[in-house]
Image (cartoon, rainbow, N blue to C red; front, top):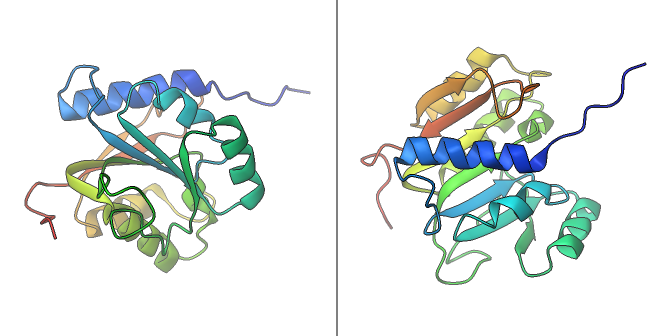
Length: 189
């Protein structure tokens, strides 16, 4: 009998830092960047990401997991929100200095809870709607309902320049998609 795989949240957070640093060509100084993790669960990644990024926000639909995250990270903004319909920003739920995010992160196959392609499209469109120009969407796929091709197409349809890192964020990773918002694709309101 094999032991259950234990996630190394610190190593995955480091891999996220590395990916963002390379894509943004900013070295490892991401202190002025705003990051939102969709499907943050108990907030294990958030605690590590908060050491580097200027603003870190978490969202999830699971009330019990949100309670655990808030207990672990009482000073962090952690919100109940459905990825398909959420609106986080100056006219949404966060302080006025946050309008959009430089990085939107959706790990552990959190989009795997979307059971239809329409739900997946809505979730991705909503996440993309929270990106700044040149923002990055990092999406770890759950292949229970959708194929790699479908994930790629949904990201392309959302207007992102799509890339796939086969190795993912950890040695046992399923790979990770990241999409970059072209500067001309999103105009400030």
